[in-house]
Image (cartoon, rainbow, N blue to C red; front, side):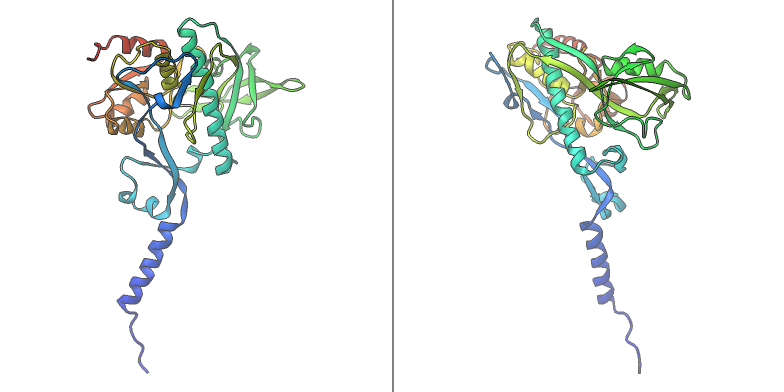
Length: 334
């Protein structure tokens, strides 16, 4: 009896089956892909708003989803302009996808409130906005803070000094040498709880100490006018700068000067503009929308954005006030 050779047809079926498996099943990695920038005007309502003029403020977002095994292994199959990142770059350690989504939407809600407060203050309104600490959003699994701090913890003191903003915490922790310890005070229902956490060197700056957490502003904000911002299922804090600019536009301030202005950056209660993720993809999204100007947090974000922005004018900013000054210097567009 002779054996028939394993035919190419059967081999093809096996290969197709393997490819199908690799395409249909998700890997542990995520893809960050560009999304076209969109105008904010239809998404923002402000009490006493005025009709929009030419130009407009645009927000930029990225699409985040799990990569299939085939996309992870074969880079040409990934969406144009996308970046493959490990799971811990997207999802806090110990959190599932649903928890990550809730966290992202909570960050968006805080960003909307803070942006409105910053914009209204700039316009001369009296805003009751009291920063009361920083909220822990995520803790790196291998960080000194792991097992000591948890998401939703509110830090109000560090080394005996008050912590009211993320900037306060960064300055105090950064004043240490890597390896030293910092004493933190957490606000809880029954009072202040203190603990001590070690520091390590920042991978991007070995001379700077960090404790390995991501934080956001905690504040008690009461706005003098009604502001409603609705981006649907878009989450995260990175549209804060765009929100603040749009609120001013809604109340009659011509901040865009007739240009289509995209903006990204987490805004803090003191007007500081903090870095964001996905700068290269967001610049590509701004470019695809045909905007004229892209406001980006200064530093690495601006450098990344320039690589994919094409003819879009990239303006790096560190504060909301700097963003307003930069736009004010543009010649009025006819």
